[in-house]
Length: 328
Image 1 (spheres, rainbow, N blue to C red):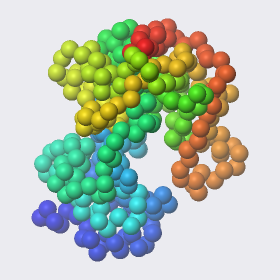
Image 2: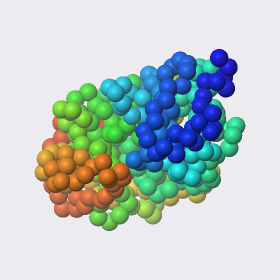
Image 3: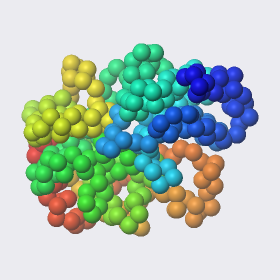
């Protein structure tokens, strides 16, 4: 079998798309990679087993994404193209990623980066650091720094998922979602139905941070990255830190821009996400009679202004208090 024979021809792939039926096509080789077409959500992509500690970064592209998902009880890397007009152009790129993963033995995330580097971006890359990414990164870094102070750098970096899974941090006994806003109200954007859904029986806590522009003092994203990076003494830990920072949306070129300095507007607040917490989940919508098969994308905001926080377990509370010093 030649390398070309491993893949569906362009005409065959277009034929599958025309049927508008679900496609899950295994690509010959190791590891097992599935080419999929999800007609209900108008997506095509690849799904492959994730390597240990593989944490893909954001692509910076509007219609091409890579993330960690749990599929069939297995931790997978999923590459998705979500614009039907690009499916025909994207298909050879997906084949290139599969080839570099199976034939060149690259991790899937590296294979995607290498394929994009050689073939060019599907559309123009982000050129500047967005306010949402900047604030989110500062919030996650503050908790990471706090965890290094109350546990160890090794445990702290293992806990930080860096934007690759549903919840930002996974501590031994609980999960934490970090939400950071630059608004005067404690208002936070929720990007999916599962973001505020606990995983199995693990408690979920939401850490709410409010930032304001610093007239003097404060810190910017590049400075905070440099400072927190020094908390990791070994090359291996620093590499893991760099990978997670990239997964959270940071690019080295942003350090050349004039970045805004920020400080805390209010004290951090921790909220235990329980049944009475304001949120939307699949179970809540299903109980209200919503046909979830017909709703593919939900984003919403919650306003926690004036809502009393909870008494978080000691290690988490201590980490938040230690980490707030990074945003003084």
